[in-house]
Image 1: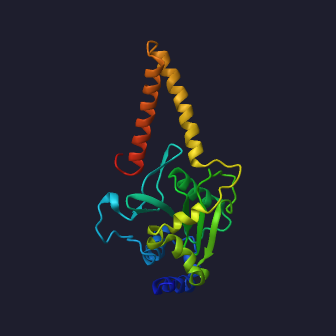
Image 2 (image 1 turned 120 degrees about the vertical axis):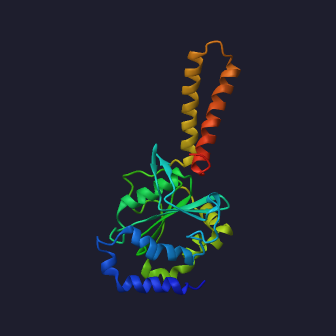
Length: 248
C-alpha cells in the first residue's frame, strides 16, 4: 500500500518546521488538529464524524472518560467500530521524547489496560509508538517495556504498510489487528487484565459474603451465594454500561 499524498505533505511540513514544532510553545491541541487528525483520516477513519453517526456509533471519540484506578481520565482519541472500542491514541507534544521517556508509555499502557484493549498508540507525529497493553503497567517500567513498534516520521514512507496493515480502518475491519495481537506471546511472569480482574472479583465475593452473612444470619448458604453473585453481576453490568457510554 503506497503512502497517501496527504501524509507525504505532513512529513514535509513537519521536516521543514521541525524546530518550531518541537519547541515548548507548540501546543498539543495544535498537533492534534494539524497533524494527527489528517494522519488518521488518511488511514480511513471518520475523525470528524462526517457521516453524522449517532453518539454510540461514532468511529472516533475525543477525550472519552475512562476510569483508571478509581479516577477519571480522558485518552485523546478512542477508535471504535461496530460499537466496540478497538484502541486508544494518546497525543503528546513533539517536545516530548517518546523513545526514552517512560511516562507517556506508562500512561497509554494504563489506558489500554484499564480499557481492556490489547494495544494502543502514543504519538507526537514525530514518533509513532505502539504498545502491548495486555499486561499490567508499572511506573518503574522503561519506555521499551511492552513496546511493539517504534517508527519515526522520517520512516513513514518506507514503513507505511506496517502502520496501515494494523491501524487503518480497513485493516481493523478485516481483523488484521486482532490477528497480529493474537500471535504475540504475553511476557512470562506477568498478569493479564483478565487474571487480575478475576482475582479482584474473588476478593469482592468473599467480602460481600462475610458482610451479608453477618447482617443476615437467617440466610441459607444457597440464598447467600445467590445474593452475592447477583450483586457482583449488577456491579459489572453497570460498569460495562458506563464504559460504553450507555449510562453515566
